[in-house]
Each structure stands twice: as structure tokens, then as C-alpha cells.
Image 1 (tube, rainbow, N blue to C red):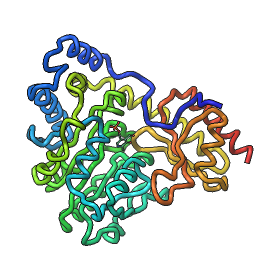
Image 2 (cartoon, rainbow, N blue to C red):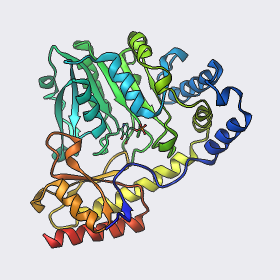
Image 3 (cartoon, rainbow, N blue to C red):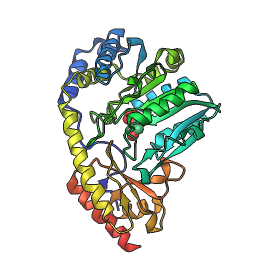
Image 4 (spheres, rainbow, N blue to C red):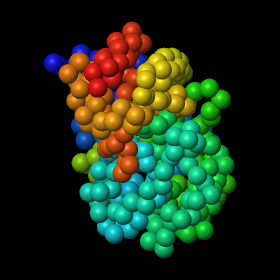
Length: 359
Ligand SMILES: Cc1ncc(COP(=O)(O)O)c(C=O)c1O
């Protein structure tokens, strides 16, 4: 059966805001630098809009610190490559974004993976963190808010991670692409805004989720001076955004963010619905996510692995991601991307029940 409700990939169901589309159309019609290799002026305008935007989260950067990229996948390449060599070690957590694991594996970087535990609402155990650091540690990768658990790292956690980074002199790589999707009393804190951390924090940012611009391939990394030379040597024409796409990014960052506020509300309602509905299913437990837009649920009691569960669900016409890609010990979890309306999520939950009842 083909998939009729696709909750597999984190690709929002809606189009980018009108202001983004209009700005790109205008740039295309205008031509000139917008449709050629692009002048320095276009990337300068983009970087200025990034600086003004990020200032609202705390830190202020110089133009040189902003490196535009094709989406945050390219930003991750530049950021990780700026601090890590083959054989180096990185501190990170599981479950975490599958793309982080695959990229680091490709780079030959050793992963020291600390757990985010369901029992602690998917928060890190800050007391045991030093055990995951060694003389080889060159960086820590934080996904904040985290895909897939939605963990929003609180200030105390970020300070402990920051202290470790300062004491052992390693870099902090902060993937913040879901920062606008934070719910309830949770608050996103920019790691770079904390005392003394800006100079060692590299931010990884994207327009994909915030403005539903996955196909536009627009992102950037913010790199402090000490890692800049190496980051610049890794960035170039092959990972730079198309000139006219910058126009969309500028329009998005200079907008009033009402579009983003609306999306946050929509995703929050979806989380409220599906996490509770899944948690009510016999054999499944699901903690409502504090951030991002995923439901990450435990199927251990069902006695089948996550791939098998997803295969069975696919036969019911619903796509979800098996948990095993999101860590080393995550095979009894499944991720649903909440990129469809609640009416479809209801159908998806009914199909999950069918799978559970068939076991
Ligand atoms: C945490 C995280 N980082 C990076 C990416 C890559 O996104 P993009 O390359 O579209 O910016 C994703 C995509 O799902 C993600 O969840």
C-alpha cells in the first residue's frame, strides 16, 4: 500500500510565507546580481539580516562570522569540519538527529554518546557528563531543541556543558534549527549568549523548519573568530545558496514572525493531541515534546523492533521513522514528524492501534 499519511520526514505541509515567495520572484525578475554569481552586496545584505535577527537572541556578531550555506546540512559540514579531524572525539547525546550520526560517521569522528533518558523527560544527566569527555574531545554537539525528543536544554544544563568546554578547551556546536518551536514554560536559551561561550560556540541555523523552506536550501553557520579560517576554507561555491534565494531569507528574517508564531501554535496543538493519544495506546508510551515538532514514542512493550513496526504501519498507509537511526540504543522507539493536520494524525493513531492489535 502506498503511504497516504506521511509523518516520515520533517518537511512542513505548508508553503513558505508570502513575503518570501514575493521577494524571490522580484529578485528573479530583476536579474543582475540576483541571478548571477551574486555580488558581495547580496550576501552582505543577508548577513546583516542574520546579525539583526540573532541579536534578538543575545549575541551580536560581525559580518565575517556569518557563513551562508545551502541549508543547515551544508552548515553542519562546514561547522563540524572547522573543528574536527578524523579520529577526534565529539560529545553528543542520543537520541539525536540521524543526520548528525551519519555525518560524523562519514568524517571518521569518534562519538562519545551520553543518554537523554525518558525517565528524566529526555534531559541530560549533568552529573555524569564529565565521564563522556576525554583528552581527545574536540567538541560537543548540542541539538537544541532536540530532534527527535524535543528536549529544550535549560540554562543550567547549557552552563555545565559550557564549563566542560572551557575547562577542556573544546568547541560547542549548537544546532538550533528548531529554536522557534518551544512550548509551555520552556524557553530557548542561546548557548552563545552565556558568559564566555560566544567565542567557542558555532551556531548551525536553517530556514527549512522555521519558515517551511526545506526545498529552498537556505541556512547558515555562525562561526566565532577562532574557527573562522578553517570554516572559510571549507565553504565555497559548492555549498553557497543560489543568489536569488538570499532575497527570500532576508525577507523572512526581516518579517514580523507572525507566520512563525502561527506555526508554533499549530505544532503545539499537534503535539498535545498525538503524544497523549499515543500514550493511551496499550504498550506505547509517549512523553509530550517540549520543543521541535516530533512525537518520539516507546514501543518496547510491543516486542518488535522499530523497523518492523514502521513496515507494518506502512502497510496501513502511514509513514513514520524507525528509531534506530537516531542513536545506538534507540531501536525501540519510533518518530512521527507532525507535519500533517490533527485530522490526519487521528487517522494515523487509528492505524497504529491496528498494528498494535495485530500483534
Ligand atoms: C536537527 C537538524 N539539523 C539539521 C537538519 C537539516 O536540515 P536542512 O538541511 O534542511 O536545513 C535537520 C533536518 O531535519 C534537523 O532535524
